[in-house]
Image (cartoon, rainbow, N blue to C red; front, side):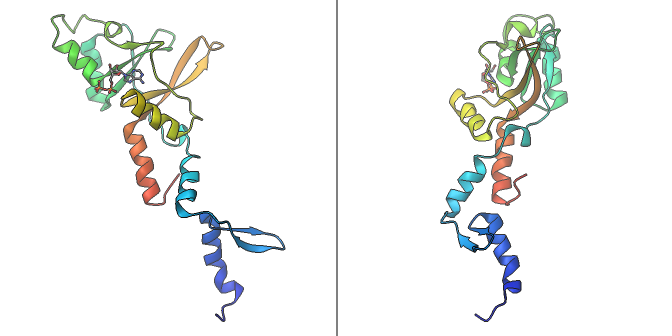
Amino acid sequence: MNLTRATLRPDLAILTMAGFLDARPRVGYFYTGKTGSQLLTEKVKKITVQQYQSIPVVVNESSSVYDAIVTMFLEDVGTLFVVDQNSSLMGVLSRKDLLRASIGSQKIETMPVSIIMTRMPNITMCQKDDLIIDVANKLIDKQIDALPVVREFDKGSGLEVIGRLTKTNITKVLVDLANDELI
Ligand code: ADP
């Protein structure tokens, strides 16, 4: 083709970065044998929760259902996490949990969220180093919109909520993959 190595180098570098080629000293460039979809799968299976997690919004377990609804609107989230006075995770509140409580006969101004939340140990959660694909599977399996990212404290007796992983975060992964802009 009458092309010098220098001319080809940028193209070879792109193919190497994409995983189609590999380079070894004294061997040079060689084809890895991996298809585009194999490389995509490898890429997806390396993405971790901490790369995509959002900031969590928490309420205290003694907060009223009314206050939780106001927080949900002000913070513009669909899921709230409930913590105790030690900031340890106690429960989860979804939009429909709050809606259900609102159409009930009890007064939401005095009803604590602890009565209506989904509580520990039935909370599905994850840690920052978990793979995003495992979290996506949990969201589908459990039919939920979000889960808390937690870290143990007090030798595992408490769970600090350090993040929030939602279906929107998973959608962002898809968009970044399509734009080849994986962070
Ligand atoms: P919605 O109830 O608004 O459709 P979800 O599908 O997220 O929202 O929630 C469905 C039910 O599952 C609710 O009762 C909620 O409390 C509960 N839930 C939501 N997220 C979790 C979670 N991470 N772990 C356990 N239960 C959850």
